[in-house]
Length: 419
Length: 168
Image 1 (cartoon, each protein chain N blue to C red):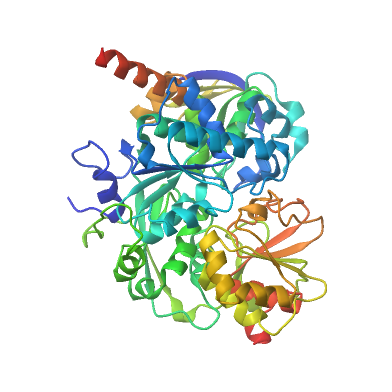
Image 2 (cartoon, chains in turn yellow, orange):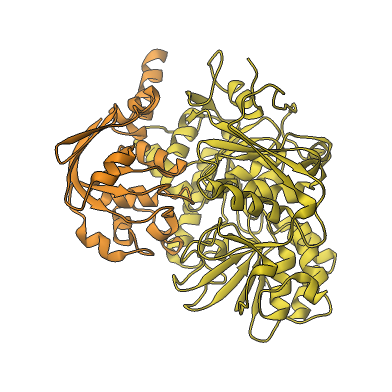
C-alpha cells in the first residue's frame, strides 16, 4: 500500500502491520522533551502513575526556557525542580546559559533527525518537521506517560500536500510561506492532518526558513508540518546528528486529503492581524498601525537568518523614539555567533534591547509584556488576545524584515520603505 | 464512559487556550490552584456559573493553541466533567481524554443545548440533551480504553503494574 511520509514514519514506530489515517496506534518515541512549564506538571503525573524511572534516560531532554531567567519565586521553583529531577533521572538538561529555546536547541544539538518521532511537552514541537521528523506537541500527562513507557497514543493523521513553486523575492521569508498557508486554510484547516511541503520552492528554502514554516503548522491545527529531508538537511546535520537516519518521501500514489499550490515568487510580506494567526493580510494592505514594541525571536525566528535580516534594516539606523525593540537570539550558540558577527552591538547601537535566549514575552511570560492599548509587531507564532500581556494589546505577526522596519518607522510598513 | 451534568455554553469559535488560561499563570504547578485562573483572559465571570458536574458546550475548533494542560486541569478543578462541541483542536482534545474528561464532537447536540440543559455524554457514541438523543462518532478503542481507566494516569499505572507482575 502506498504511504505518505508521515505514515511511513509512524508505521516504523508502531507494532501495526499497516496503518491508514484515523487508526489509533501506540507510537514509540525516539526523544521525549519537556520544559519548565510542562515538565513539573508531568513529573507529578508520572509519580501518580507509579513510575520511578524514565524509560530511557538517553532519550529524554529537559530545557529550562519558558520563564527563563526566573521571573519570580514560583518560576524559580519550577526550574529548580526541573533541574533536580533531571539530575535524579540522569537525563540531559539544558539549564540557564547552556541551551536556549527548546526547539531551537534540540535541532541545533542534533536530537532531531529525519524519520524520528519526538514527543514534546510544547505545541511547537511541530517545528522538527523542518528536518523531516515527526515532532508533535503533547500535554503534560501524555508526556508523563511517554517518560514512563516511551510511547503515546496517536491517531494517524491525513496529509495535506503543499507544493511550493518559484522562489521568494526580497523581504519575503519562510514566515510568509506559512502565513500564506494559514490565509488559505485557516486556523482549523489542518486539523487531523499534517502539512507536507514539497516542490522546488520547498527545496529552495534554507533550513532556518523551513523551521519558521514548520513551527506554525500547529496554528493550522496540524500535528506537524514536514519537509522531506534533502541535501540541505544532510548538510545541516553533519557533525550534529546524534543518531543515524534515513530520508523518506511520500509515495507518488499515496493518498492526500488536499493539495495546495503556492507560487513563492508571487508572495509579498504578510502580517497576521490581532487576534488570530489566520487573520492574514499583505503588509502593504494594512492601514496605519503605530507600533509600541517590536519583538524579534522565538523558537523558530531567532535564527541567524532572522538576526541578519533585522541587522540589515537596523544597521546605521535608530529604533523610533516611540518604539522599543527586543531581540532574542534563540540559543546561546546563536547569541555568540551574532555577537562575533557584530550584530548584537549593531542592535544595541540602534537602541534595541538584546536579550538572553528565552520564550519570554512570546507567550506572555516575561521579558517584554504589553500594556493595554499597545501594539506589537512580533516574529512569534501566536497573536491570540492577551498572548503577550494585556488582553487590550494587539500583536501583529510578521517576518524579521517587517519587524525591524516597524522598529525604525515606529509603525507597520513594508520594509522597502526603509531600505 | 458516561457522564451527566448541566450545560454551560461558551460562545464563539476558535477559542484558544491562552484566553482560557493566560501564560502569565503557567508558573502554577499545583492543579488545585489552577481553577482560580480558568477563563481569565476571556470571561472570568464564567467561573461563577460553574457547578460540580458542569458540562461545557462549545463551538468549532475549541481549544486551539498551546499544549498547556493547565486548561483541562483547571476545568476539572472547577467541577467540569465533560465537553460537547462542534469540533476540537487536537492537543486540547487529547488532554481532556487523558485527564478523564468526557469529550465528544457532536455539532447537533452542541447546537441543541442551552445554558442549564441536562446533558448525558456517552463516549461510545451518543449525547443526550434534555431527553433528546443525538448520535456522535464513537471514540476509537484505545481512546475508550483510556477513558474507561479514568484517564491516562491510571491507564499507564496499570501498564506499569502489568509489566512488573509479568516480570515476577
